[in-house]
Image 1 (cartoon, protein in one colour):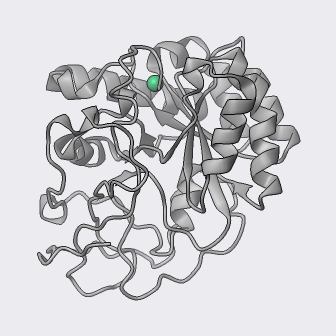
Image 2 (image 1 turned 90 degrees about the vertical axis):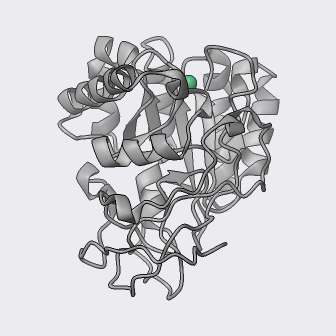
Length: 312
Ligand code: NI
């Protein structure tokens, strides 16, 4: 982890315990651990969360699909697991009852753009449609504003990450375990990747629009549980972070630029590439001086090099 030598100016005063999941009314599996002195905050862009316990987040992209998403929900329900669904506005607007069911069953819903656009190539107005309109659908269907977004293809940059939080209150969520399920490598392969590569705090990427992924899902969930992992939502994972959750950062002074803007999404995924996260004010009354921090392990471009235009 690297700490920025540049102190950030303003610390937003907030209660020291502020689980990001309280908006979803999902009880945390365990009490929040006390933040440890010197721990950096969770960044604006997260691919893995530093947690002490055996927790992972399973994330589902590109849905919902009436053909496959209900099966995913049933598998999660009967195994006592919770997931996070990054939905497209195009699908979500047509299947709002599925969103309501997700929320009612304790899952989290995040924004995955409206048309699955590569946001780094969109105009500001296009980005606004892709994000704001999708967030509005989620809000309308569930009564809850989303807190997370996942950029299609993992394509993002520092400016986008800042804008997502500043303009929409959305933290950018990537992943550190990519099952590549959209390539249909075989059910057992998908299971083995998800279960075998998971570490505490991992964010695992699958897609709930593929029948082959549904076929693998129970094996994934039960395999992770057999390793001792509890499957929680991304916001719950963040709340379990060793550094604790922190409120959204809105001050530009609190948002140091950390990432090169351009073509990193074209880099191959690398588990320990040390993709930088951007620090936001810590939740506790810490001295000003907590800046950017490396918290995550995945290349943000996992998907960017796939050359495919429909997955992630
Ligand atoms: Ni996608």
